[in-house]
Image (cartoon, rainbow, N blue to C red; front, side, top):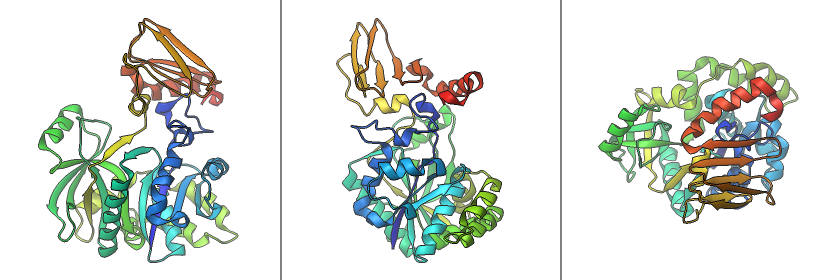
Length: 366
């Protein structure tokens, strides 16, 4: 049976000061009053059904997520005591689903993407599910055609077509976040050779768990201990004892990369020629908004600009007014605890500022 697991544990430091430890980016109502997590759940409801959607996130997010997502059962919220990167979240979530349905086919989805059109997304993901259901030796991922030489995304190097599945190709290699010159060569080679790794996957649960056992045996043994206790009175004790000891590593590095060159397993990519936006920074959020003729855009607040261009204004207070005179290319974010003013070209430096604020003023502002 088809299931969906949404990984919603990111901290979202590039969207500080609005994204905080108490309300990370995937729970902020940034898009027409809805959070990215709500939008992600909405995309999957018709695909797998309400009762087959699971969310994996930090234990501290449990109450807020259950309040945010109507119909989400506490039994389908998989709580991590702490973040240990995506391999462990994916393995734990897939393993929990397999306890309920040993024949499960599990799709892994993110909580911070905007994807349109939704109908095309559903059709393409259904193709991925069908491929994974037929092949217990394949891990299926989805690839997006690059539109520019991005250095913040991983890339899929494509090989031969997968017989019997229109458009799907074997992945020869995963290429992690290249420099600009390398990314430019990928862009020139075209989407028949290189695609952005969309960070979404589909596999049979047993296939994924076998891969974890083969490529990360220490993590597999620890996760097996947790799964053996899952649903028993010992669940929380074992989870809190074992989870902090797990090696932190991404599912891409730990599983997808070695599987793509393995004799037993393989990786397939289904092309996803749709509009796909990773809303992981303030400039990427601005792309979702409709600007005025001067390129100024706002969400969550009122704004007024005089002789200013390309301003992004955001506030969590809808009555707050943000104004500028003679300013260009600024990001202005207002919350009840902090205000950020940043040139758009330095948006990636917000992560460093987030660290500096914590060291200077403590966790209260993070």
